Amino acid sequence: MFDRMRGFPQVRQVAPPHARSKPQRPDRRSPTDDVPETIEDDVFGTAGAVRSPPRQERSRRRYWFIVVAAAELFATIGYEATTMEAIASAAATSIGSVYRFFPNKPAVFRAVATVALAQIESVVLEVLELVERGAGWEDLLDAAIDRLALVHREDPAVRAVLTNIQLYAEYAEQDEQLTRKLVAVTAGLFARWAASMPEAQRLVVATMVVQTIAGILVFAQREPLPVADAMLAELKLMLHRYLEPLID
Image 1 (cartoon, helix red, strand yellow):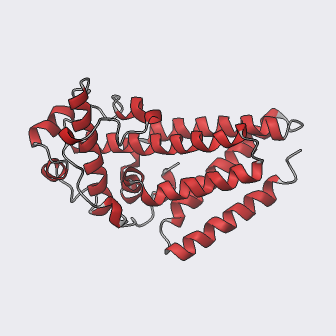
Image 2 (image 1 turned 180 degrees about the vertical axis):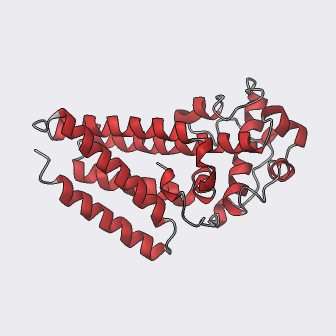
């Protein structure tokens, strides 16, 4: 999903105004205020090489604010300029609390990448609910592109991995797993909408759709907003024309 920017200049992305404030202190928030339920297991799992996975409510709050603060810093000033001390300060916690969960900065980044991938999967699952409401493939495709474009632009964790694409190897396996999952889901949709298409072809077409959307979304972030919006409109048109002859 995210490996398409390797070898290209990094993109310095600035967080939108509503996303640049510090997280509130953990003891003032509920642990589920900012953690989408669909990604909670990933966020508090061990994919980020967590030294001490949070178990108690207070620990889970603190862990989440550390990850959110790190994502904002990685996205705005970059990985190299971000220090563990800066992460602790932005999360309104002690440096000891950061090291309690994470042995080093790469581990923090892997946790941020885990959140980014989980956010993308969560968006796809939400869009798939449209199928149960009777949405056609055109509406589903357009909604997926719009929602994914929004999370690419505004989600701090996603912006963090896009800004620091040189660290792709840190989460490549997770990214590849997510890509395979999305391809399988898309191929399953084609089994519904293109029943006459051979299974092998459905898999290839699904791969084309998933990889094309992923690639354009990544590269659109390098362009000014009007150009990015125009690219997404062309992406929809291109995929509509590609799929129309294939759909029953």
